[in-house]
Amino acid sequence: MPAVYVENVGDHEGSEITLRGWVYNKRSSGKLQFILLRDGTGSIQCVAFKGNFSPEQFDVLDKATQESSIEIRGEVRKDSRSPGGYEVDVTGFEIFQLAENYPITPKEHGTAFLMENRHLWLRSSRQHAILKIRHEIIKACRDYFDDQGFTLIDTPIFTPNACEGTTTLFETQYFDQMAYLTQSGQLYNEATAAAFGKVYCFGPTFRAEKSKTRRHLMEFWMVEPEVAYANLEDTMQLAEGLICLIVDRVLTKRKQQLEVLERNIAALEKISRPFPRLSYDEAVKRLQAAGSEIKWGGDFGGGDETLLSEQHSSPLLVHRYPSEVKAFYMQPDPDRPEVALCVDLLAPEGYGEIIGGGQRVDDYDLLVKRLEDHKLSAEPFQWYLDLRKYGTFPHAGFGMGIERVVAWICGLSHLREAIAFPRTLYRIYP
Ligand code: 4AD
Ligand code: MG
Image (cartoon, rainbow, N blue to C red; front, side, top):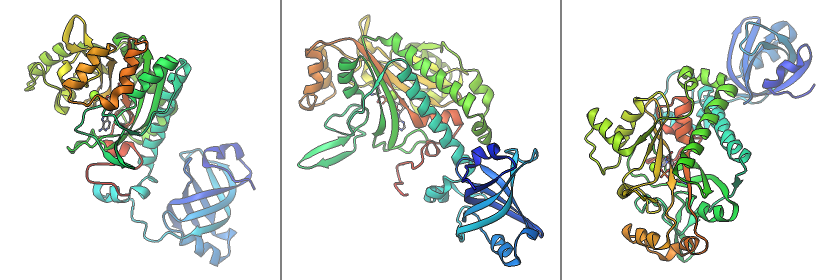
């Protein structure tokens, strides 16, 4: 009897198979027991008829509790009424372990309780659907860049460099030196772009965000492309294409999961390029008209991003923010040096920024000055300055936070559900 995954049960209609998984749900009606078995690839109803078992055996099965691990043998039968189209008539079974008092029951639980039990909560259908979609999004990102000839180059986690400002650094001892956990692989991407032309990195990044928001995690995954000789417009187009591919993939391959999440699929189906482009100047005017306190020169708060992104059913490209509010490496606009050649992509439906990027400073002297302006010691940046000494080149790229994209695509109200084990301000367990 072959061991089969639930997702492949349909290939075995009429034959005997073995399934291994966990009891998701169970009900009995005297002569019959209905076990909903899940194995990670899906769930299927298994029906045990009293007449096929000894009374003792039937009783053992009857005591199988939620989340008990079990092997079930039986015959696959087509059943148009069941969600997956098939059922299994149980001929034999073996309980590996009887799970007692599983803490997560079908009743409502509070968020704190669920987060404390995150290691178990992941088994629920909603969390399962979210993480399947996350996987699809990551796969789409890789395919997108791989198919365009990008080379994936992993960047380090331990680094001496503050890429995104000094206020959110996680410091750690590195033998007799201090190191930081990386905030972004960008600076290293700039080095590899000079060696490979088109590169991307994809890994965990770390930020000690001291305010509690639904949009920030301490540890999040970022995909970051960097392209030699690309400009701001190229970067915006690269970002647009990526978002369109992600949406398209999830709609084609993960509709079932979107349905589990009761996601408004029509909102995703509307997404198409080109996305509207809005300068920071125009964005400020719009925000002021909508009642925001923002003044020219200030960075957008979470509320401002929500406001802007609620005004559109499409993602929005906001470009040319004041250099003052952006990182040291941003290239000034030659026509208006007070603004940077940068872009943020805001997701619709109030989700706000999911991508940040732009053109990088390529002039040695300007970069030295920018480091000084940002009170960053030039010493750990010598290697980065070298890139402006030995064949400097215009280049641009961006970073996209995976959890922010997952939250938007899945319609989640908080980033904590977008990653298996979220690291939040007050929680590092489990
Ligand atoms: O806008 P950010 O800070 O840009 C950079 O890090 C650039 N160095 C990227 C580059 O150009 N290569 O961050 C990029 C994205 C944000 O748009 C957001 O999606 C995500 O990273 N992000 C976070 N996601 C979750 N939790 C946090 N604390 C995040 N901070 C940024
Ligand atoms: Mg940003």
